[in-house]
Image 1 (spheres, rainbow, N blue to C red):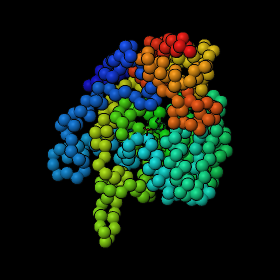
Image 2: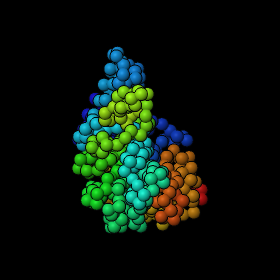
Image 3: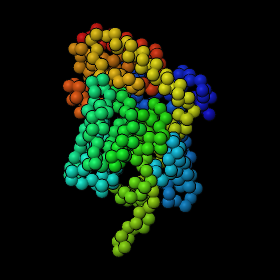
Image 4: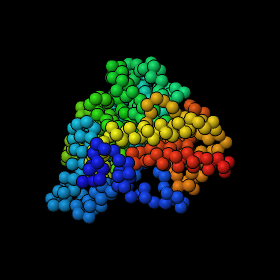
Length: 414
Ligand code: PMP
């Protein structure tokens, strides 16, 4: 049992931190302050151990071996799928497709669903705060099918202009794809409302949950989204693994998007090929077995944490940083939507974000600078990029103060 599990109900950030070995190091002779969690979270010992144990004891290819290790690897891989299904509020095994990440999951839908359901004049409704992963696959499929992309605007405070979004919904809208939580701004979109409105207009919905699942529980049935996608590496799990949840009836009607081993029932030059059932129809080739197992371990670890308390802790960290930034008259905040999560994006007068990032790194403080793969959003605010500090449950108030002091030091170099 992990230390965090023993403290269920009593959120103790020091105990949680202890489970993340990477956080215990010095960077540039200063204690590491890791505030780049929206890009990727760090991994608890339980996840690192699950991956190492799998390779030490159980590794084999999955699904087709008639021996003990193959059976063990298959059981662990498929158990991870069940863990993901439960994590998303009780989805079915058939509805959980493992992918390389959010990006691949959206490409899967854009190709397998988009190329069979979109035609000239059909509309794809996006928002101006989408990550490139939820823009470019749709641009590619729009070009191939003649479909048209519509983009709902973002208000000055970083909230979606919901009225404008609703006004863009029409009988021509075939799919509405929206980010649940913006990686650049932290704004939370009212996705349940948006899904309901899109469905009433006859459109299918895809929700990009890459920045949501690590901050609060997500129930795909309550949201009623047709597709929900996320990445393991932002959820304390490994890189190279992600999830596409898809409503069974939709997945069933979609053709495969990649062909190869693992996804077939029978292959014949004469009689053609028939495909495996769900979800394997969408998992061509040897999957990232260790990645799925690591993701299962991350979910088990997170299930041992009091998530309400964790969310309150993250909100308190953000409130402390917001208060400090609000008092700085050389700071331009980008994204101040009410109720946003874990992200503070801003510009410092007279400093390029890249220089700010470098000067912070010299003090052991890791943040992300640049466009955050949201170039249209940066364009909307007329800026090349921002400095982004993003929190996770293991961050501390001392780290917030250290970041604020770090900015003072940056100013002294300007
Ligand atoms: N969508 C959002 C909102 C993200 O934050 C990210 C990662 N920055 C992605 C999509 C892409 O995720 P990945 O690179 O893991 O596929």
